[in-house]
Image (cartoon, rainbow, N blue to C red):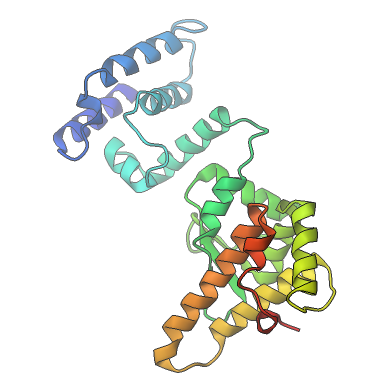
Amino acid sequence: MIFKVLRNASAKMASNKKSTLLSKPGITSKFGEMFVEAYISPAFGARSKSEIDLLVFTCLIEAGAIDPDAPIYDIARALNIPPARVRNLILNWQLRSTSQQGDLRDAIVAALKKTRFSGDGKQLTFGVESPLLKEEITARLKRKGVFTDASFSKELVKLPVEAFVEFLDDIVDDETKKQVKTTLVKDKQLPNKSFKALAAGVLGKLGEKVAGEVGEELAGELVASVGEKAIGFLTGLLTGDPKGATKGITKEDFLE
């Protein structure tokens, strides 16, 4: 079965002029060498079907035939298998190839750069296609007693602003939180409150602005401006950049 999948993937990629990775010199031989070497270790035929599937998928990635960061749907089309199966293969590959001590902060920052407020301004939504990153974020939230809304899409994380602040409190380092609090209180003249209260006040106010009634011509500009402030605030927090986090925040951007 797995060899049939491999043949289908090879034929599909080779027939597509825009994607000929498997037909490039060296790719096929590299895959073959890696697969045979791994398949006979520890003994020929000792692996289960699921392990062989994962081995083939891993060899395709390491040979350069598949980009694990590509959209899941594109990989599914190339291999002629359901997206759910691709998602499971990627998760298992990531679990084995990513160090347990590896810092996923950069990946989380990249995902949060596309954060959007809901129409009522009370919830934040961002997309995370990486299965491992989605599980990491979900696990962190569950440890805080927060459960995300996954009813619409497995790739979307949707949660209330207050719950999102709990996530920030868990992942942002103490020194950054201290400096952000100092800057917001001293330079931005915000009330002397805890980091979580300040973060909730800033995000709450920005969400309120999105939900507020504005003229139709100004709505697009306002939402874009608020979105930039929110993303700048979040990105600064997660990258340990207090100045970047507080740069665009004013006293008018805080919900009392």
